[in-house]
Length: 263
Ligand code: NAD
Image (cartoon, rainbow, N blue to C red; front, side):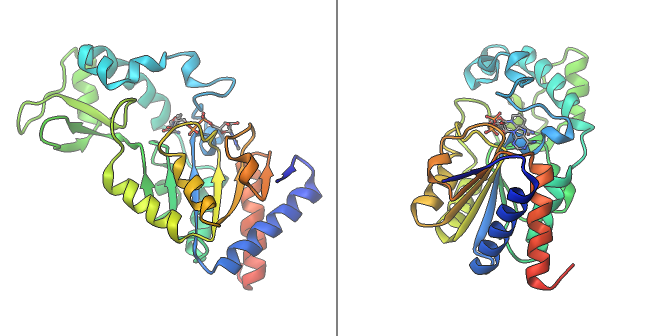
């Protein structure tokens, strides 16, 4: 493992190596993201210095707590949603979308619920932890945009499914809930085929999501990590870049475009 910090020349050299690995892999690659890819868009991560867990206790987002106190959790969720909903994609999201458009990655597997990869133009986005902008019925699976349910919550009304009367819940995966099966299957398909995986902005401490890049690396994919803090897979990575994703990933795109003769 080689660690690279905020030194311009070293960062450029690392970006060149990542770009070369992507070109060599011929598209058999993917990016895996966490909350850190969106901090430059103004959305706090969970465990960083201004992380969400310093304001909202994580136990409130367990499925058990939700069943016992649905209206309270819906209210907390409204607060969280408001802090996310005005956010715009940043340079890191755009760079990841560009890598896909260049045919260098198959897509992005994300733990985020903020929809910013799609907003930046990424097409194949696998959301392991669901979507923050949708609501889902816990009984029949009916799903809908979250906005109108938040209006009800603001008026003190508990969201009930219009189809079966079941309890509606934000479609973000809560602690203690299973991950969406189809998303997991698609993520592991990518992991099994990949020759390169780039982790961006994740401490890799939330399971089973973190198994996706781990599985890829165990099967021989080259692992590159772009993360300000330590991650649990640093030891497996070829290069760990301790720089802001929004400053490093555009360098990778620039180098890749140069190698491909595009721009
Ligand atoms: P995490 O908070 O555990 O880790 C984020 C990592 O990103 C940290 O190690 C931090 O050092 C790094 N980081 C922060 N800003 C960065 C930047 N600009 N460039 C590079 N690295 C940066 O997040 P996680 O691993 O995604 O796990 C937390 C869980 O929280 C996930 O399950 C996710 O669903 C959820 N979450 C999502 C959002 C969102 O949708 N934007 C926000 C907060 C939490």
